[in-house]
Amino acid sequence: MYCRRATALLRLTRGVSQAPRCGFAAAAARYTGDQSDSFRPGGEVSSLWLSQPGTANASVIKCEKNLINDAKLRVESDRLFVYNGTSKQNMYTYFYLRDLCKCPQCVDPHSKQRSFRSSDIPSNVAPRRVEWDNKKLVIQWQNDIPGYGKSHTSSFDPDYLERPVTLALHDPKNLRQVRPWHNSRMQRWQHWVSFEDYMNDEVKFTAAMRNLQTLGLIFVKDIPESREMVGKIATRMGPLRNTFYGSTWDVRTVPQAKNVAYTNQHLGFHMDLMYMNEPPGFQLLHCLENSCEGGESLFSDTFNVVNWLRMHSTKSDYDLLTQMELAYEYQHEDQIYHHKRPVIQMDATGEFVQYVNYSPPFQSALPLAKTSKDDQDRLMKILRIFAKQLQKPTNIFQLKLNPGECAIFNNRRIAHARNHFNTTDGSRWLAGAYVDEDAILSRYAVCQKKYPNVWRDATPATADSAPNDATED
Ligand SMILES: C[N+](C)(C)CCCC[C@H](N)C(=O)O
Ligand SMILES: O=C(O)CCC(=O)C(=O)O
Image (cartoon, rainbow, N blue to C red; front, side, top):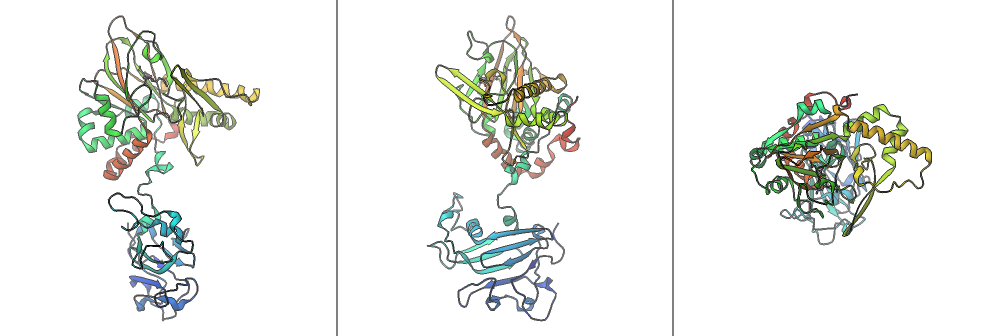
């Protein structure tokens, strides 16, 4: 994976006129204003000094790093460029590079906290010396942040320059590694992990997390019979998300229920707490009792439905779902929540679907006051189609949770429902909890960092067909 010979170039602003030599041998080059201490990059070549004079002619030095294969470095007075291969060029201002420094003076090695503010960097910060060897770009500064001495040295390896955020996991592209599913796919792909493995086997836990990322739904089985377990399973991923339902809660029938979840009625497809500013990212439902007739759990992947809609509706109808908001509310004596959101919520790049928002039982007045009759008609039409696809039997994964089993699912993607159950014989009791998306994304990132190969290989869908054909007509 590394370049076999020298491929990276260091190109200073002007060539140096010694006899040409193959540049492959060069190991280090420095650009320095040492003598005068006044660095005038881009101008005086007299201030150029190469540590290995034999290579001074060469605008080429070696690089073993694939990432900056064929890289050239160009130093100018207020910025430097790394030319990466033929097509890619990255420009780095000195403000940016100074800000990027993670030396122990700048970032405390223990707390990992930064000891300066971006706003502390003087506007005329510039290199006093630039050094570029096979492995690192090393800069010493002039006009550094007050308090930093001459010895302060910033050192950047090419990987860090190219990818300064440790894990690209929070990059939208990585987050989109989802595998939309319909029933027959989920029949094949469903991921079950035993409580024992989930709690104690890092590799199996990582595989479970990877499947949670791609499928949005996994199951834990063989859970000890205890009300405490749902909290344990949740906190293995991240802290419990507290809401007015409590940090964990029970779904069982109660008289005069405040919430239809607490009755034995059928519950249509929905997501929880859509009326909140930040609905919980993930939900757990741990079955403690389920001896009633009925009471099956149903799951449907809204990303699968969105794919289908994208292919089967006009762009303008589809776009209505991304643009027009529905409103949700929870109005009781001591809680008054209200929030508006489109059914299909795009991410900040506008390129990817980030969330789907859907909870008919908690809908409030449609915020359509300024919407034409025509647009309202079209919105209703596309909503009908959405609902129909969502609850189409071939799209639904249905199972009756047994005691000792727990579903974990992405509440911003997977809609859940349950069948009516008969309480005259038997009982039904689920214990539930929420975990915020932030905590789960962090858990994914840690799992990926510790077990990159497990992370890469654990998803069943890697060997299967493309996501776009996910919905059956
Ligand atoms: C937590 N608990 C099961 C009690 C209720 C679940 C939430 C019910 C409803 N979907 C909502 O969004 O409020
Ligand atoms: O009873 C169930 O299976 C699910 C309950 C539910 O959907 C909810 O609490 O939101």
